[in-house]
Length: 371
Ligand SMILES: *Cc1c(COP(=O)(O)O)cnc(C)c1O
Image (cartoon, rainbow, N blue to C red; front, top):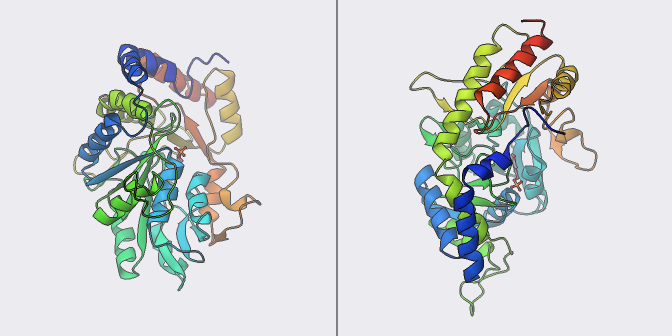
C-alpha cells in the first residue's frame, strides 16, 4: 500500500543521512571489525552522556536487555514480579523465562502502571517491580521507588519505548537497578534490525551484564559463568551513532507534532495523551507513540486507512492477560481491559511533514463531522 501518511518513514530517515551510513558501512565491511569494536563503545559512551548514567551495555535487542537484566538480578525461579498487562509481551517473557511469575496490575489513564496498586499485589514471594514506560512517558517513579525501598524489591525498568523521557528532570531507565532499552526500528532511536542496551549505575551489575552478553568470557582464557550470545553488532552501533546526532531534534519534533494534534483534537470526542508543556512540569514525554482514545476504535482506524493514513491498535484490543497461551497471575485489570478497547495509535515521527500532520488532522475532523 502506498500510504499518504505511513505509520513510520524509515526510508526517508535513511535518505536524510545516507552518505554517513554508506561511509560507516564501507569502513566496517572493509576492515572486518564486526564484534564488540570501538563503535559499540562509542555508542555506549553516547548513551551514558545522554541519559546521565554510569554504565551502558549494548546488547542485541530490547528483549535481551530485559532477559539479561533479569538474569543479572537476584530474581529466582518461583519468585513473583509485579508488572503490567498493558505492555509488549517481551516484558512478561523475560520474567517467565527465569521461572518467575509475572503478576499483572492495572494501569492509569496515561497507560502506565497504577503504582497505588503495587502494595496489595505484594506477597512473600515478590522479588521485583518491573515498570514499563509506555508510549514515551515515564512512570511515576517516586511512588515506585518508595515502595521498592520499603519492601526491599528490585526495580527493572522497561524503557524500550521511552529513550529521552524524563520524570522530574531525571531520565527514564536510570531510576531503578537497571533500565532496559530497545533499538528496534520502531523505537525512538532504531538501528537496521535488532539492537538494545541495558543501563545501570551499579558497578557490580554492570560487570555481570558485560559478561552475560558475551558468554561469560572475562578474557579468552577465563570464563566466569554461563552467559549468552547477546552483543550489539558493531555495524548496528555505527548506524546508531550516526542517528544519535539527530536524537534531540527528533524528540523535539515528536513533541511538536503531539502538541499540534492535541490542540487540533480539543473539541472532538477523543481523549488525547497527556502533554505537560509548562516549564517545571514533572513529565517530559517523548511520544514514541501518539495514542488517542475513541469510542469508535475500529471505525476510525478503518476510516483513516481508507484515506491512506496508517493507524494501528497496538497492544489491543486483546490484553496480554487474555492470551490463553500465557498463564499469568493477574489482579483486577478493569481499566486495562476498557482502555484497550478504545486506543488508537496515529502516525508520529520526525520525518513527518507539516502537510502530513495537517492531513491526519483534517481526516480526523472529517470523521467527527467537523470541517
Ligand atoms: C519493543 C519493546 C520491547 C522489546 O524490544 P525489542 O528490541 O523489539 O526486542 C520490550 N518492551 C516494550 C515495552 C517494547 O515496546
